[in-house]
Length: 146
Image (cartoon, rainbow, N blue to C red; front, side, top):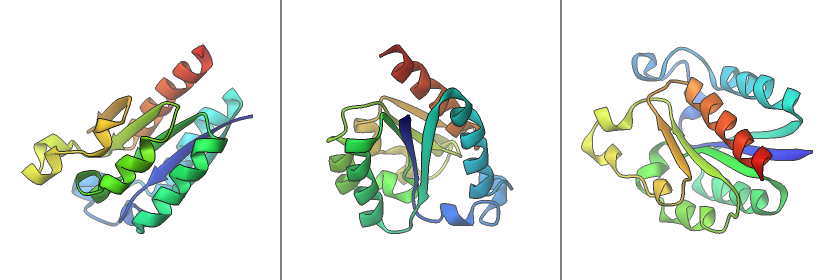
């Protein structure tokens, strides 16, 4: 079975409760359920994780290098600060997609720069939690075509 990792960065554990006017009312559990419902019937295994710790995200990226066929990441605030996550993603030889629930380009200027985008094969922003599903559809298309 092909495995896809979906990784979520800091504060996404508060999805649904934190700034719902920006991020919506759906929870991270809702995101995970939607992702599973999409990929599992297509024969993919989903590894879905969230951490507020940068090192944990890096460890999961390292694990994905040898066990996954693709990775979707919402690095949250680490998007704008983490060269370490970029370096880890640069070791991956499969599709990597960056997802942001809000449109980061309509927000504060510091959110306009993404280190992760330097490695990402695609970036989806501003589509709410549907962005995860859009990224997964693209990933499955790419992996299925390989």
